[in-house]
Image (tube, rainbow, N blue to C red; front, side, top):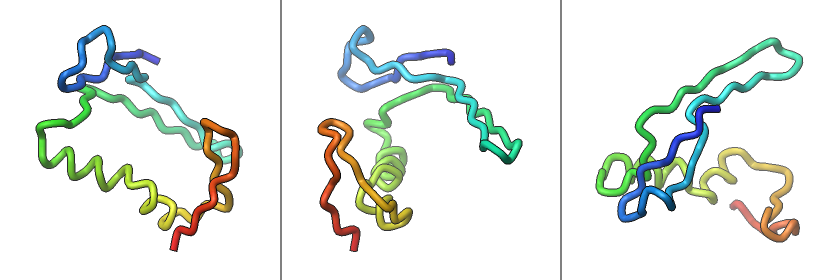
Length: 86
């Protein structure tokens, strides 16, 4: 809930992506819940520390190696992805 625009360098306000600023998630069958509240959403451009953190956090190949999913699907095509995470 609470959609807010992401501050993006060089992008007009009307064209900025919008994301939820409050996210609630439950672990089904566990009775566990987490609420995440986001403030000052930015694309991180122009801030070297943020850019390095984003690059590491969203490195797809690194995430695949770390989490070893049983199957990858390209959501744009609906087709399985032929990938060798090694």
